[in-house]
Image (cartoon, rainbow, N blue to C red; front, top):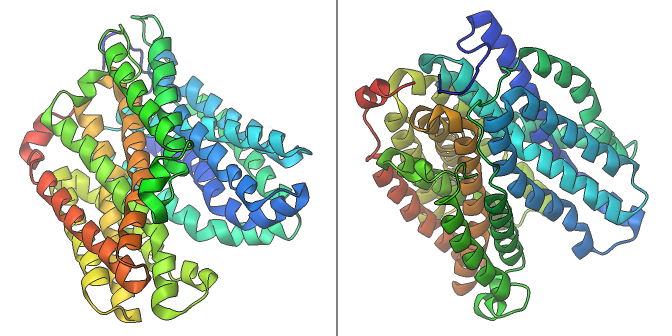
Length: 466
């Protein structure tokens, strides 16, 4: 237990831990479902408010920008103020935003609701992961993190189906959905999550929070407006170049402020050891690999001539293996340690990418490669890297370290869209262009495996468990 922190309920008995895990699972499912069910509502929302396709894309953009900024801020607050209080606040903000969207009669109010949703959901997953570190013994953390990681696969399986059913009664019903979750979640979370806050209170790092927010906002804006098909001219456009340049300035300011702040929002100690730096890089790399999935439907359209909707359904093997692999590799973490799991994941990812990019693309090679990619991602995303962070980061910074993993993963996802788009365009598009992009990812996945080889072996990792 960290000095200055009162952790009530730490190392609960198995029955209490299972109940707590159910509460955390439900909260993460609520947030993950939102991502999966909103897409079918976009045309209906566009028609309701009579806005353009470009304007309606802000339904996603507002959410993602606020989510990116809310992730480190809400996680840091949970380290300072307590897991229970901030987790409940995250759920409440998410539901308030949902209700504002559902009842909006103006498009700007709808976007405000989406931003509130995104800000609240930003803290749900990092705080849930930190709670697992606080309350689960070391030999049970991998399995618990694997179960939480499986939520995203479950959400993407049932989300579109549920969205299609609710959409028949009006798109507003998609955003009323979180209310029943909140009615159950908030009282249970208040009762079951550990309470307590740090007693060695330091001044709030307002400067760091502002610099971090401006860095993420300018970086996200610039990458979001980058035209991958016309990369170099796009970099010179007013909506891209100045914002990417500003992100570099704000990043330098953030580093300067965090080195001097008494209680920085992102502690330099989270980059202080080789194991932590490897975890940071692997989180970024997992985001790069995950971001490539958005190009798979276009590859399928080019290769097989299917419709875009059919191509989306053809992603099912990747989603299924993600949902199955996450808890499986989580249990393996507890038995064999993170090094073996991450090495296995990077190996599966490399093999899957190689099959998709180097072999003639048939339905068999695509489904085989897709299943291997899904399994590889399930061993890289979520549980393994978060497991390393829980074990290596100071206990008083557990939520902040989990937020850092989320941030680096999301930045990796954002960069992938720009970089792979440029590769696809430079190789003429079509099947050849897409396969060239996935060849580049094959070598990147191989590099992730080389990084994973540098992780601590199991006996050293177990010696450092806290």
